[in-house]
Figure: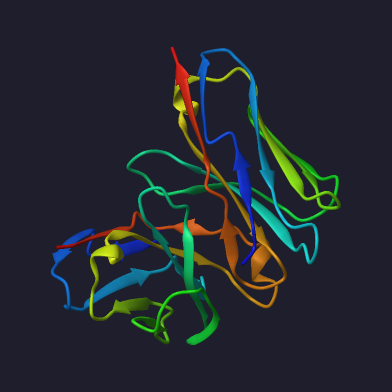
Length: 111
Length: 116
């Protein structure tokens, strides 16, 4: 059983704050690391799929980094807005076609 | 482009019954995977189908089964339902292929099953 852990489990920030959370995964047999955003009453939506060690990806105010050698990825949100409130999921792929998801980080941004 | 469609969205069953859930992937997507989410648990992988073949299976009992049709539509079936099977069942599609893990998943809105 692969262990994918996310921290913190939940996070409350004020509008305008920048924040980041962590996804840790096994450092062996790495294939890809996915990040998804899941808003209440909606479907999870892909943010990034990362495959290369040292990779950095950015979409608007959200960015992510990847360290496959030590088995972690960070997701950063700059200047959080209330609409960023959601659960952020990471998922690890170890050269199969099966994703192992972490438990998620629930972000709540207060106006 | 139509998204991933899951039916039914909500259903209530009693213990011992069986249930079939359906998933229509995005046109052109050949991989369909299924996930279960229960309160307090993350998304748990059930199985993945590609071109009508099951490529991967998660750690679930044999009561959970699935199949994929030639048009890539997929169904999952749960027999002899137990109270613990109450969950949100999500289907996701992707282009798939031999390096399918690098393709993002597109999720449906889920089927919420309640077992009484």
